[in-house]
Length: 59
Image 1 (cartoon, rainbow, N blue to C red):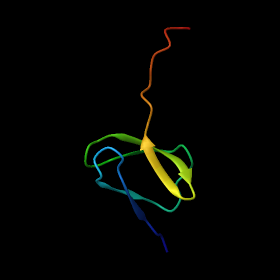
Image 2: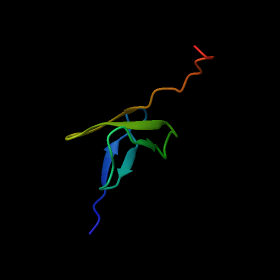
Image 3: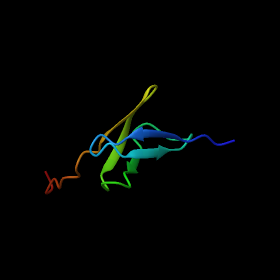
Image 4: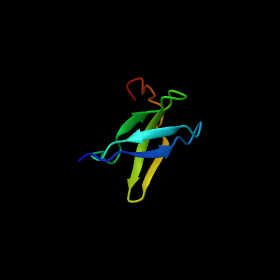
């Protein structure tokens, strides 16, 4: 039996469906606002906006 949970998107409050086998630091996408979300804690489950990928220009 698979159990999914819903967590509110920190940006738009739209429910984000989360499966039972998620991992810490996994990236999900909100279907409402298309934001990339990162799982920052598993117990309790916490979603946060994923950091933007920045170029380091070889630094």
